[in-house]
Amino acid sequence: MSKLALVIAILSHATFALACLWDDDTLSVEAKGLPSVVDAIVGRVAVNPPEYYEARIPLSLARLAQDPGDYEAYDNLAVAFDKLGQFQQARAILEKKRAQMVADKVQPTSHPTRDPWYRYHANLGTVLVHEWLLTKPGGTELLEEGYSELETAVKINPEAHFGRERVQLALVRWLLASSGSPNYPAVTVRGKSWRDLAKEFKSDELAEGVIAIMAVGSGPDNRDLVRALATTQRRTDGHILGLAELRDKELAAKGKPVLLSEVQIAGYMPRDSKTLEAQFKALSKNAEEFRRHRTEFVLARLKEGRHPDDDPRFWEGYKEVPRVDLRSIEPLIPVAVLEKAFGFGVAVAVVTVVAIPIVIVYVLLRRLLIRRR
Image (cartoon, rainbow, N blue to C red):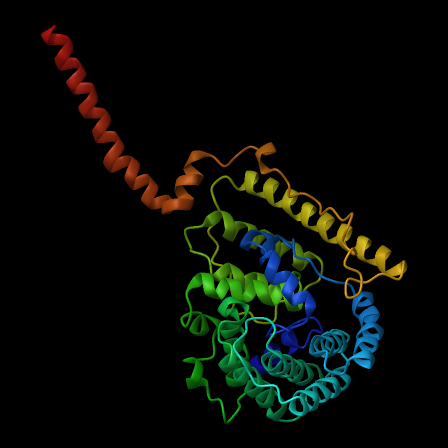
């Protein structure tokens, strides 16, 4: 399989998103904040089941029947169709939104959440990218059109998603370069590799971009995204890299593929690997319980005919599974703590070059004072 085929294959998963869709749930994610790096790696990421989006469709249609100028309802409806893989319906709804905004003479602004034109371009661009990824049409015209829409959205509001959308836009640009698009040659991303792309951003910016894709797009079970997230961490952080390596092995055991083999975890496991493995096991189990409990709650509410789009009390009574208390597990040994902060070699050097001479001087001075007495 060629490298391009591998890229297309991994990005063709129905849940994989290269840019963030905008609907009412996006605002909720923004308000609560993104998962931490550790949460994202071990899989503690909230995702909604398909039934959630199926129930949203009639609710959004009812809102639009009552008020054709309800722009958020267009967004909710388009995102629901996209999540269910019904791209033609999503595009049709967004076209209706565009026509309504033109009729209402709505002007673009830079409002961070409520700008209907920004959200129109962001959602249309994402839908087009998803449609290209899943249908694999000949050529890259559809993908280029999607990129153009996303670029327009970022120009309207460059700080959307607190600036993370620039990272996601760069990921689509990387895909275009990798797919051989004549209009987006590889030079636009200084090469075709993930690490070339990573050079364009600070590590925390790139990490937030990847986590946002998990939180609003693909979910946490994509091995390539776990690996990509690990590459944003410092090599000296053996604890996080070790967790990512264990998570990668866990997903492999579940049959999840790795298709972007160039994205590798820089192995740097702490010396106390048994403790880390115990911690990961507890974190992974906790993440599964968190997601299962949340899904069960959502499905039970949907069965009652309730949905957060029209029921502000939908989440009342929901209590998320608490995070596991790692203090119940033996903490990492001091050497591993030093290893995390400095790297094992540097830690040993510090102890050898600084600590030992200090001890020697202290012993000599103590003996000298005892003799004088």
